[in-house]
Length: 77
Image 1 (tube, rainbow, N blue to C red):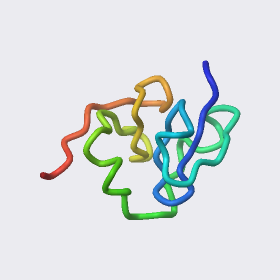
Image 2: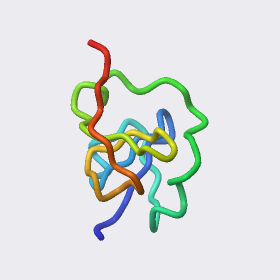
Image 3: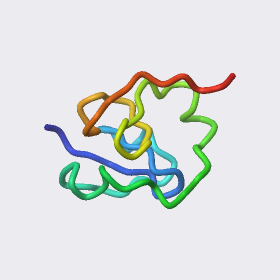
């Protein structure tokens, strides 16, 4: 798996740091998956392009392989 990054503002996971508002480097899923992000509000710029959410903890992600139980999102418009 490529490098992983978590947005410290909203908890989004991505493989490219430039896609996040405030990226923090993570080494693997165990550092974040399985625990809900402490931040409750998803960055608006991310909401429009995040196709996945973790079925275990609700953490949003751009790539399915970055979360434990990927589900397709249904964000309200």
